[in-house]
Length: 467
Image 1 (tube, rainbow, N blue to C red):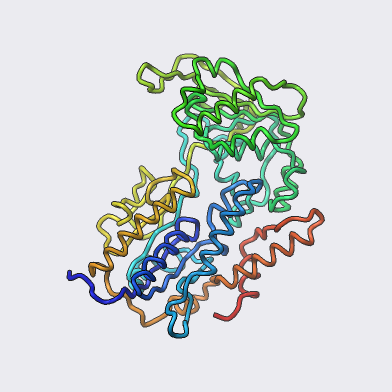
Image 2 (spheres, rainbow, N blue to C red):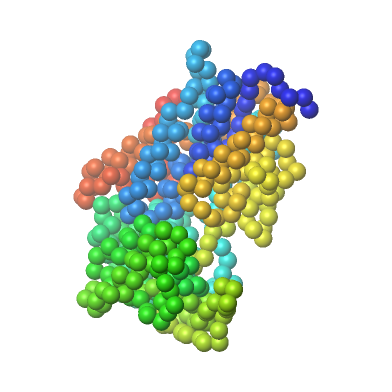
């Protein structure tokens, strides 16, 4: 097809309002503005509120997360209007929440109405851990627990916390978040935005010992230095390490400076006295999970000790160790969120794509974890979105995008179906409401999250300005 010679005029739908989707929208708006074009973006989100895993997938006691939320808020709140020399009829970007693409509106219906659709649905489910006993009562996915303590509207309001001894399988930041929240005293979470039902649950927790298990050694941890340091600052919790796990580990030979810092931190904890705290957090390395044992529910977990061969490959030995625990949390990764009507690689949990272009689907793109798998931090999500947007703009300039049917507004379609969608103005109303709840709470807090979906929708729709 011929190269387009006129300025870009694009109508784009983004499915998912987490960091990946918001970064993609911001980068696309900037790219089109630089070319003197016009752009309309509709940002669809299945939840009533924006920010995805930043709101519902990160422990509430991380102060740095507030900075990320503020940054994302500014992107959505301050994107340029469609034209500087004429009154704008709508924002360059609209937030449309409480709408699940593939259920409330079909993906094909979006593709008819937009020049391009970007999938940014992320990964919110737990990856599978295929060992015997994994389905026993008392065996939980870490993602489900994180969703509970973050007040996700679609999970139960209560969580069973009767276990005294708990195992957490994984050596990444999610494993540390889970372990820290389990070990931490609820009173030390009162200043955060943790919902009241979660505080009540944690206050009744019976936990005394939390064990974190990694398949490899200390030199292969996937934590970040900040996450690890926070673990050592938890009040009234002893950190327990085992000297045998550090045999042959040389901090000065670490592959990067971050790892050197973390190994120094771990070695410093080995010299701490243990025994004065009411709770303990045990870090175990060189443990591969074999099975979860129990008669009707979790009673213990078995591991095989591991080592590495001369080439650094992991080797599972015949040495088996068993630990008495009454609960197991699996933090072994996430699995991508499929969109009905879109191609999906079930083995990898991603949308099959080449640099963001979905395979054999012109005009359909992917970014974030649904594009590359659940790896990397927020910074990786931004660079990942840049690749996708660069290719989308190149396709648009080459005339490779189909025409969009602009005869109706997607909001009119949702209105006809009585879909209770939320808007950006609705989010501002909900945000203000949650902050007010925090100001008037018996323990003054920055905000208190509204948890029930219907209540979020009611506050958003009642408080929203007319569109």
